[in-house]
Image (cartoon, rainbow, N blue to C red; front, side, top):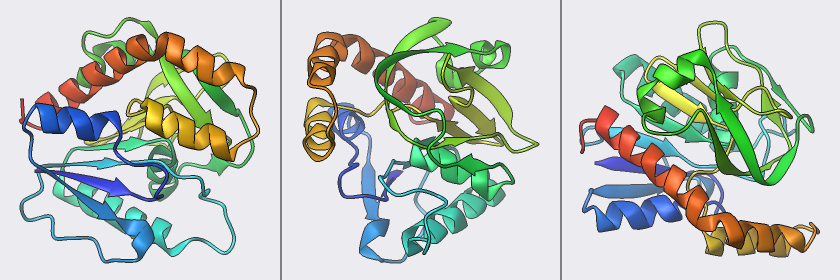
Length: 223
């Protein structure tokens, strides 16, 4: 079973929830923002940690972030595969000794990321081109922990993907869909061109996100 970790009510599973339904992959959802304790991992094969509007450096620290960091340590100890998205990737970096920087390397909208040499050989990115289109929505960015592997970068943000043990983190949003994007645009005073750009490139971006999810399921032994 896949466990989704929803840190923010405005950052749901989106495309990934729909694809797991279509592919008949069993999954469940833990809404850490509701303050509930993380469910047992006894039947969990892999975890997907979603994004959020809060930041690792917020003060006072949102309690749900500490719960997710505890989960990340547990996943590392148990060697369970995990995909951590945006804020999830920043929490991954912070948990294992990396730094997260507020209001640095901000990116919003459709951008390109490029794989490092290690990224080209990493199973999470199998079948993806060396440079491919993704969707970004972040103000903060991370520096890698000392023991992590750097997998991807963009011209504006060096930290786009990392691997720490069996935990992968991506700064972009492979789970994005129109409903999530519209929610974010309604709450943020960004140029009207962004929704138009996303709709124009939505099929391409979701194709890349779908490939990434398929690869993650293969890594997890689920496909």
